[in-house]
Length: 288
Figure 1: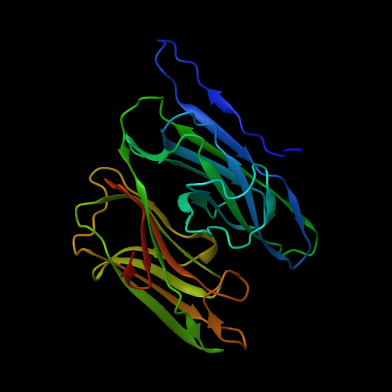
Figure 2: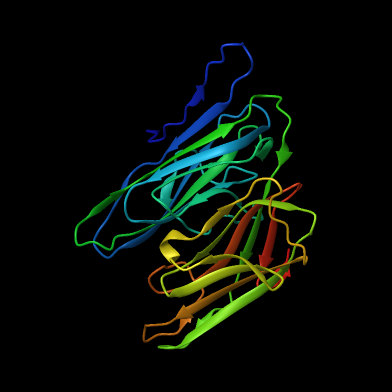
């Protein structure tokens, strides 16, 4: 099979002979969108990790037209390596994709503090989810480039995991304004190293609160606010993470939860926290 994937481990030299970080590079195939088109593509591959490794730095480049890109890790290989197709029901059979890295900006870099990392399994399966919208009057060619940098083999680190909320109760009448909210349990002892929101074009604001105290707010849906924290990190003293999104529905149709950034809306708070042994998901106000 012809593989459009470039997936190479890059080893940095160390003058003292100490083990080096290792960077895994993912280059997706390119695809073309016609004017006005909105597409969701998924690219599947396996990272060449021969043992458990801790990812502590990430960077990405997306060509113009991107709404978002998410790298998920999965427990099993969901499609053969190199599969590139429009996304359909990924995460079936109980293998829920786990949020590893995401970006809404064309170019982004993120380095986790000190000895904190996201664990990758040996031969880690991943998928890159790409959401593109061509709002120009000419064809658009798109692709995504991602680099994931791991600590040296055997390096001790604190595991970070994803904290993800999602609201499926959005229902705003044509021409109306309205909001949705959720309140999720969070252990006051855990520490967040990053936090952001995710929503679509009808959003006027998206916010995250510690109980009643606001800790983050987004006004530009295309460039969501991303807060990154170092010592002493962000903790939710109230034990409650509240997220809220407010919308103005300028269409003549009801505005409901869905994937399309042109016709649907979303309301999410997404964070990365430690110490943790698993990822946390909160649907509306129910923590899984």
